[in-house]
Length: 89
Image (tube, rainbow, N blue to C red; front, side):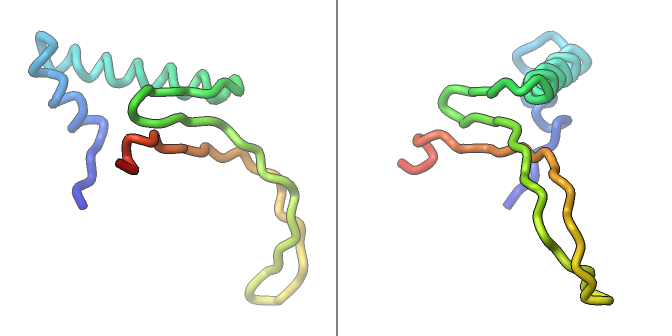
């Protein structure tokens, strides 16, 4: 499996755009807008790829593995990704 970073995406886009710097700015802007939308509770849909949305987990019971003491785990915000049906074809 190959890991693809933001820099790799920018390099791939630099062939289409005039420079790598311009491509990096475009990639950063896309991720910035996605982050802002998710923080505002909006769903981000990329047709043919998938969708992202923010979920808040409930408070749940846990335990300290060292002391076996029961404790409450606070609610957290998580990003959920649901892939497009095209990945199943």
